[in-house]
Amino acid sequence: MSRRSASFLCLFLAFATPLLAQANKDGADGTIRIEALSVGHKRVSAKGTISITHLDGTPVTVDVPMKDATLVVGDLIISTLRGLEMRMNCRGAQLDFHDAPFKILVQPPAGARCAVRLDSGSVDLRSNDKTNVTTPVIRIGSRSTEYGVRVRNGEMARVVVFEGSIQIEEPKLGWLKNLLGEGKALDIAGGKAGNKTVIPEEEIERTASVAAELDIAKAVLEGFHIDNEEAALAALKKQHADVLVKPHDKTARLGLANFQAQLGLKGEARYNAQPRLIGKSFELPPDFERKMSAQLGDSGANCAEAILEWDQGDKAGAREFAKRAMDKYKKDKALSGSQLERCDSIARSH
Picture 1 (cartoon, rainbow, N blue to C red):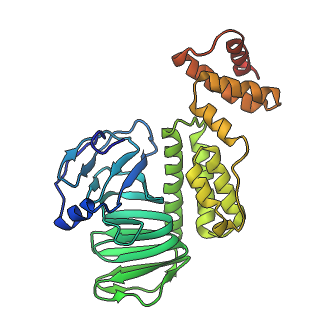
Picture 2: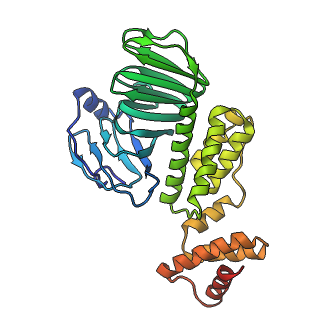
Picture 3: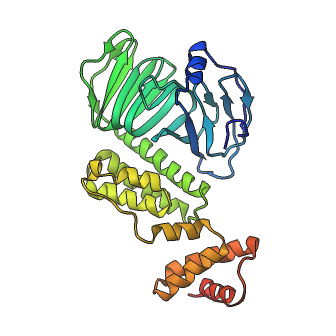
């Protein structure tokens, strides 16, 4: 989706500076793609207010939910919608924004592969490459890490590091001498840094909830059918929490990766199963691509998968695909003859 064709609900102000404009003309790659939204557990039908102003000051308007909208250097996004959580992709880095209202500006990378300015709200970020997050209180530089930044009233910032380490700069203090390492949290306000502490339980709880919610949101927006979203959400939340507490635990990482793969979240699954985190290569299940194609495909693809699984003895799996095939058949009328009869029979079986 191009940024011109995206249909955004826009309230707000033109925001562009000569520095940002020049950076964009020079071809600096600061694009961010919006991948999923969740508003109070209503991932597909929720309506709300999101404001976007492009580099040239053009306001554009979109309905929530939306995905795959692209922002470029200098674009400003502002949420005034309570309960909104948003997943973005910034050159391979995954960013989850929450604690609305929040305000984000896409920055010139300045040597970082992913650069954003967070003026308010919260962001959790996972990346194998360089990242840079600037706030009114601090600036953070990192590489190959997972961390969160919380900004309150533009005056106080909290940083939590779930995996790896980050470097922090504060205007009065300069670059803090020691890196903030894995499992640590730090509050900074008024030019003073507090003591490093272990990550508070509420941070684990909140971050795991947001990550699970956005995994479900992205799966739903990509067309995956989830029979019991509440159960899937609870299971995902626990698995995310396990990984946040023990980021190098192979069992926890692979459990989360497998669950994400089942939802069609290939990028997320491959991040969590990469060798640097679990020490060995991870392969998606051999039939994963085929099953994903069926789930996203027409009634014929789902029916073919249902018949295959039935003949292989997976009656429960076959029924799921058959029911999906019959639902899609109501719209595409792509089944006929013996295929239609067979799928209908499997869907009705017990």
